[in-house]
Image 1 (cartoon, rainbow, N blue to C red):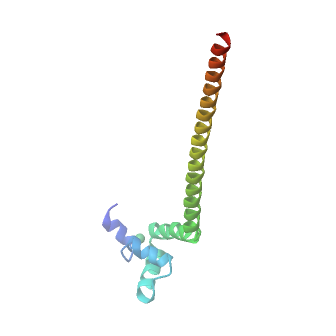
Image 2: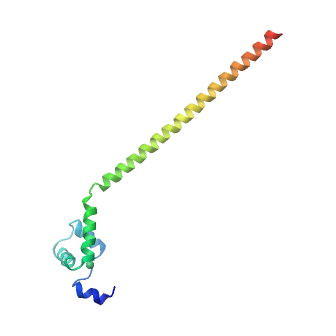
Image 3: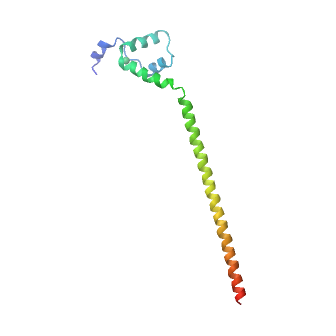
Length: 117
Ligand SMILES: [Zn+2]
């Protein structure tokens, strides 16, 4: 956009994103606050940005939500590990069963050969 054109409508220059964020979080005081407020009355773009930012800021639960996600992920990881342990447990059980069957088969064959003699 043409800068001169923008100057007709805005008496002050656009604050930085950090300034807008500080404004939304109520961290601006005195002149800085006044300046931003004055600018917001003029600049549709910035007031929209502040609207968006305040909507985001209202969600104070965002860190909680993130923590819950993290916990859920960790829980999934833990159950995944447990599942892996179960798999190894069943493989071990399977190997033991196969070994027992093999021993029984061997015993049966040796018995069979002995009785046949
Ligand atoms: Zn602006």
